Image (cartoon, rainbow, N blue to C red; front, side):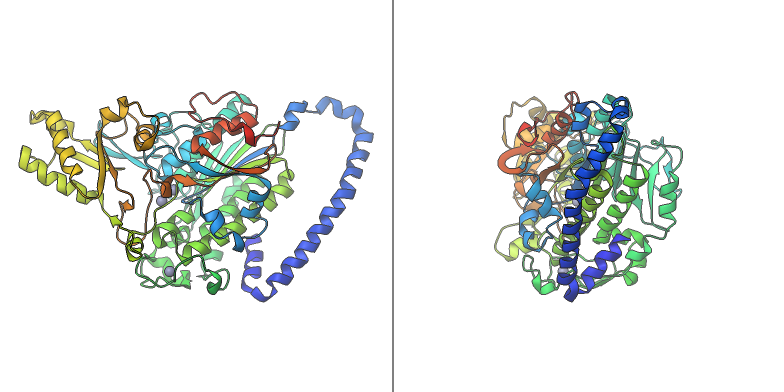
Length: 583
Ligand code: ZN
Ligand code: ZN
Ligand code: ZN
């Protein structure tokens, strides 16, 4: 398998330079041969078969289309991760995308909350939670008085896993994805396949018309699973892959890819800011995954290491070849989300040696994927984009250590503060059902049955919150729904606000205040550390270049739709970035 090959290069550092030089020479020879042989083959072929090829030949507009669209989302990738480690990246991974593609350096999320479910849904649909309905990873349903997970659907049995595996579908998504539109417009002759370690990173990218979405279930034997929403049983190739014992190869030592002393872009490995694996008091390399596996939910441990991203590439490559993606005139869509960078970022933070290592390894995964696409679909026969579902804040304890005021606050603490005040004023501490995503869901039932005045309760909550030193501003849902905002944080809240699914009162935390425990970090705000993410278009019909023009995450789907010659995405609130598309 290809990760073997990477490992050989990685562990034998001394040979690294020689090996890569040899491979470069081989590549140059192959390239040169192609230059001579290909035109020759093409001319022979067209001479002999030109008469019969007329019947089967696709129209010239079909030939213009890429055979495959590949969407790569890196879970929790800040924009600066492209530049920061540039010197240590290979020439053929991120740097190839930057060099040969169009790099949009000022691309932002245009809503809050900047978390995974809404992030993937917004990339895929070109709209925001206000429209696509994925208002958070979770939201609160006032009718059932229960939390809703964004991709849970009890109507569909899981495929793979066991009786305790979660049941999932894309049914909470209210509008079409790019993949949906592409299938509908091509009379369902096109395919959409979605892959991610995280269920929501896979399901929400594909959409309701996807042929399949796969995600990783790490308990028991470790396997790729899906839902009966898509099919009656897993394809044979998936079962074969699952039975190949592929996960056990990755239970090994996680050490740095290169000499740790060359990791100059991150802080020292040993510090008080990082959260390590369960059962491991150490926050320094190396990590012995054999020892940690049983303390960390079995193969689920792999999610929190760079090997989760390697597993994702392994499976994506299997999917491309077994599903014959990009092999006919109907453009297919493959969505891949690399989830492990998010787990690693949460545990170790954005400036950690562990995070730097995760990116240097992910770069090689991108290179491996591009090389496979070149050989299987063809160089310049596919169009690809790379972006992220959100960024992340620096760890508050670390920021404080360098003199930047920062704070952790948990939503439970906010709830306790409010309940104390509400009990004193109204005699009940049951007036709030839930606080999530910096939104307060009021308990309408209790408020009505106690005959309390909703307005006065809201004012009391707003007054209390406004006096807290970690809160910047507080809004009622009416202010957000009816406000006329052209820009600013209020517009981000409005774009992220879904009327049936979002809360009654919305608060904005101050900059560098995060809703998390005191080690590690998170994301979710509308500040640039969470909104500013990479966006690179690459491949067929993409202009080579870069720009600092401000773009929005919702521009991606309509831009690709335009490139594919599809009709406009009717629910998208983004704009076509025409300047990245070749005429
Ligand atoms: Zn995420
Ligand atoms: Zn560390
Ligand atoms: Zn996250």
